Amino acid sequence: MKKNFKLVIEYDGTEFFGWQRQKDKKTIQGEIEKALSKILNQKIKISGSGRTDAGVHAFGQVANFYADTGILPPDLKKGMNSLIKQPIVIRECCIMDDDFHARYKAVSKEYQYFILNREDPCAIDRLYQWHIRHPLDMGAMSQCCQAITGIFDFKSFENTGSPRSSTIREVFLANISHLGHSRLVFKICASGFLKYMVRNLISTIVLTGLNKRTPHEFTKILEEKDRAKAGPTAPAHGLFLKKVNYS
Image 1 (cartoon, rainbow, N blue to C red):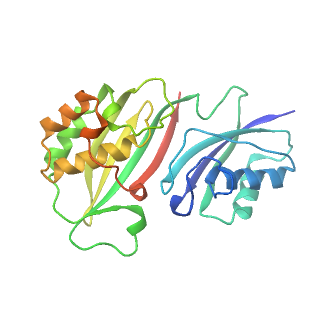
Image 2: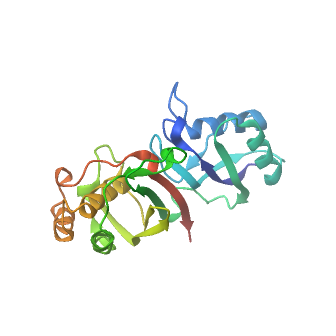
């Protein structure tokens, strides 16, 4: 009898062509499916809560899959972590009700974007934060975060190719704060995200922090629903999928 397994996955996206399985390219989904298929001796396909792009990391990506096996979740988790020779770690493995689906049952997702704001770059953590050498105006950026909290049409911050029927999303929380040692973190939790939405938002917020836009102009960009008005897409390596929330 098939069981429905849920996985919580942490990964460093630097070496991968994103989450989604691609022919002849190394992806997180592809590596996990290969390991599971070998352990369970059956073809396994997993469903993720959503895609992360090439270079994006995750603390808490969620996926599920169905398998006919007597192996217990703790043993399956241990087996996957010993077999996957990549910067991918299965943090949790458990059995769920048959109707659980990592994508369709999700009610919100949380992302974090890290910035190093100082003149000198960083050698050790350079693959996990965006280096901005000029001082940033935290007050102006916080005003931008307030402006996107609520239900809005985020078409101005969507790149082409987004799989969606609507560009309206509800943002439950958005803020930017100091972490110490010249590091900042932008946190956002929403009902869902459009393609590159977080990276386009933070790049435009950073322009405001650099006084190249005003908070009022940022709000106008949101209202005008024109991608050309927003900033360029921020680098992928500063972005982390923090958590996927379920009811």
